[in-house]
Length: 152
Image 1: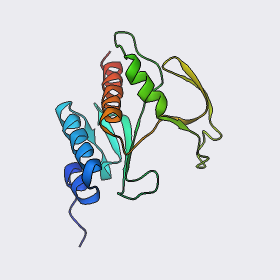
Image 2: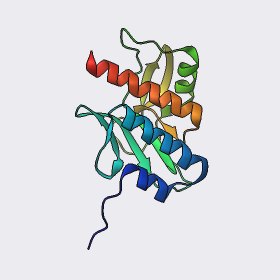
Image 3: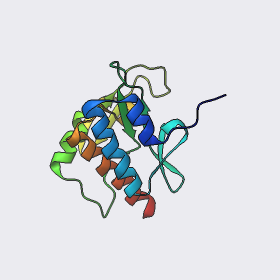
């Protein structure tokens, strides 16, 4: 008999501990408050049927553990939305340099991310591994930016 499917919060409680667990639970509350849903095995975040982020959560010390969020951003700010300088700096600190994972985007490309140019960037432009509170705020801002883009 297979295990019952755990909720996102139950998965967080089972897989993570300490500050990582606290931050992930805060993220889960944010998702719920903004009508975002997690997909099968909580590997995606969706809004109105659109995948807006990918999540990996395994509690391990090796990247992409213990948990990582890849928001599906383009690196531009849509009209009608603002992104303050600190959020840009946090995003730039989490630009996802190509790790030669075998994906179609290898060896990465030059991309402009919120006004700053980067080389060797993965198709998943941003990667927030074990995000602290400030990085998690940036992820939340990115998801709001994507939601704004979907709704407009």
